[in-house]
Length: 245
Length: 259
Image (cartoon, rainbow over all chains, first blue to last red):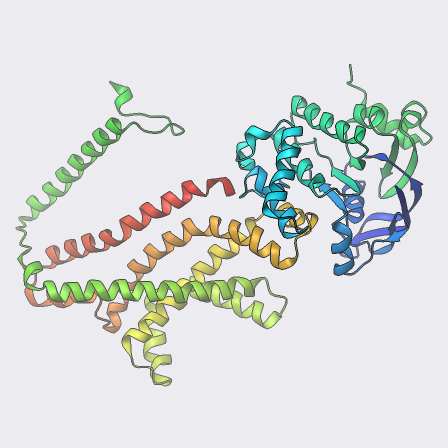
């Protein structure tokens, strides 16, 4: 998947600069976006998902500009699956309704087709028994796996995940990461913002390091972990890995 | 023995415990009021209820009618004002803010006098029922506006982002995400507000709208049975408000998932 970001910047209220002059032209399949909190990772992911407009710069996916007006962005979002850190599921709907409603109302599936698609996904993720539960009745891990099922239900071209495990206990973290790994093996392209360094290193081909709104480093994950080019990444990794067994 | 009188907050109280404790509470209340009545040497005579039953029934119906019409009007005003507080049109936003602040910051009794005697007279509105409903609706609308505004604020930003991410249009987001959550959050408080409307409607007696309180005032001024009249009035209001508060609690339990 060819991702081209040209001079991408984002400021809030014309004061706080979150992203500054990001240029990125790479063909990626699975990318981990890492960096310290407040570095602009989530903002960048939202721009890539067409949920937020950049202050300046362009985003092109597969050579096509994603556009700036709501109509263009709406059409673009139909090709993207997005998973939020937490509470991304609609709280008042059952798990299955969370998946079927967008399929019916946005993608024009019939009620039966939507249900079949949702059941197939729930079955694949081992969540069939929980289909009628509302998010509040599900564990954090189950919620995130339903959110992933919803994000891929309409067969998007790629998936964006914004710290999908950062609100979870370790055991749930693994079940969510396993799910993403399965999707990867099925050929799904994704960009994930994560603090799970093991996952970034072993499950993602590429790695991008965002620091103070700037893209400081990009490369193959394995290389970045073993031989970081910048002092910032080196320091960031050593801090994160300090307490690892 | 002690376990008969205690239960942890998170547990459901067993029926026999609830009955026992309510029974004891009733006895305590009866003793307190019994002693008070005895010390005052009161003799109750509720015979007026039968004698004035038609007037009482009319007053009761008037209170219910006033409250229902005021509920709908105030809901309308509350929605319009809550939308206004989030509007980008400054005149509309400030009007909504000023309305809520002024009405919530002053007592209803002042508003009734002011609107009825000054504004009502100046604009030639002399229908008491019409004025009463209007004043009550304006008053309650400010509170309903705050209930709706609070619920809107409490909807998680991620819910709206998620709606965008799954591809919903603005209309679909409103219909499938915002409205269901808003209704779930406001319904318990709105039901409670309806009980307030019923009680607050009693103040319209000061502009002689012949509702329940005014009927009792008129009756008590002829038979001088103040205690009996007002005890009976209290019971009538409770007949209306207790079922409503019961419904409100049911809604609260039913929609707990939303918070």
